Image (cartoon, helix red, strand yellow):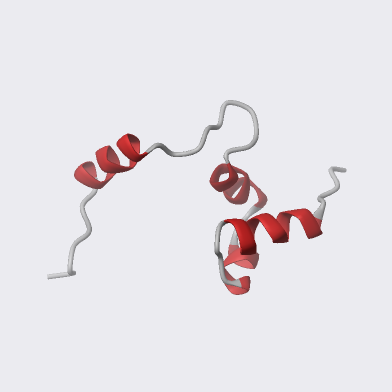
Length: 63
């Protein structure tokens, strides 16, 4: 069974990523790891990649 360093994860999520506590606790460990850029084969999202995704999946106003 894998143990989590909750104090460090909370500090990274709430202080580092500026998540609200409710947002932090709603994440799965895999989602948090992805956001922090940790884990095998993961890297932080670059601005270029974010812009590419924004073009591919634009926000809509629901109308």
